Amino acid sequence: MAEPRCILIVEDHSDILRIMQFVLERDGYDVRTATTVREALDILDTCEPNLLLLDLMLPEVSGWELLALRAADPRLLRIPTIVVSATHRFDPEEALKYSVFATLRKPFEPADLQALARRGLQAFAAQREDDQE
Image (cartoon, rainbow, N blue to C red):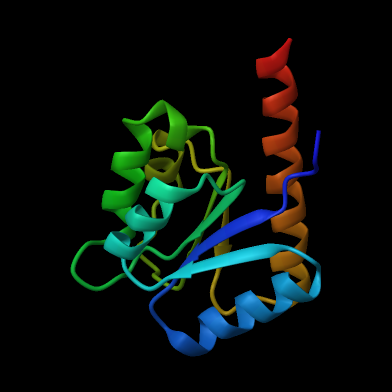
């Protein structure tokens, strides 16, 4: 079975989005991007990424709303999610309620992003193997 390689980034700040996309594509990942929850949902309707990187502070609908939708959908809940946020009001216990895989605080080091992405994709692969047994 092919190694998981598809990552969806949901981030509304274009500079941060470009950096994340560049770093991950340089590592050979297939990266899809969205700047709103609506765009992310459109992408999720057409493909199933192996990892979701999600900003919480988004225009119109927050990342928290996407986490709630994800928690209610078994197909989406299978996708490891890394919350990438600069907010100081971020509550890790709230994230656990939504089965968030990990958090990455902005600003971040590219190496930290790479390491978390690798771990998230490994978790996706392990879960997929468990599902097949």
